[in-house]
Length: 259
Picture 1: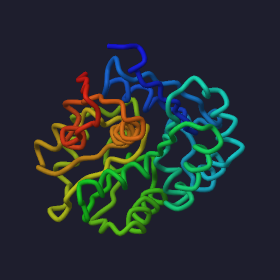
Picture 2: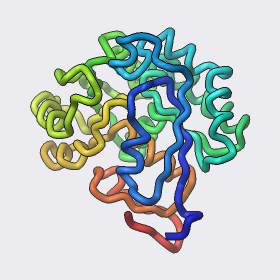
Picture 3: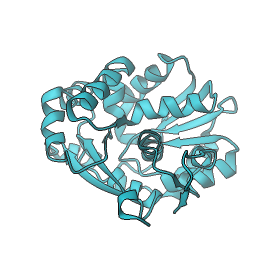
């Protein structure tokens, strides 16, 4: 592997919980480095437990230009791409405002920029999905869960259901098998795909077994963020074992590296 083939992803997030810095290298070991810059420290015990701010107003504040530019300045120019890793912030902003955020960061820092919720929409559209089931971790709460459903509806998807998973209320307590079992038992028959939202909801290793069990496309926050990173950087890395989203992907280029 040539050293210049390794992608360095600069993660911007308001959340304290470990998320993309664990899952992105796990998805593509040896091919992805992650540097994280948080827009603020967790301010309270509840925020630490849940991985950071979860109210819509707080998430919007932490996605403001000043907060993000300060965080990005720690990472650039040492990264190949910036990734805004906050599913809930995308919901709080809405699709159009999140898109504007990505454009502004790209123009300001002159690097490709991805965002989780935008990536989920793009991935589902790339597979011609129209009916989606959304699953969030319990710490999202009803308000963000509802905002998530509205986010996807605003982009023309039929959200057949949006649920808070009945799982332990802490990222470090959740295991992939728990996610597989709960989602498979609750999944609506009409859903063509499932989105596991939340970058602190480390469920990437649930994707493949859940697809095998349900026969549906499964898209997970950090998995789809890496998919978007690879689409934007065009580095020909083939990711295996983390769902149909990657199995169906055919990178451009003469050399396709497999992890």
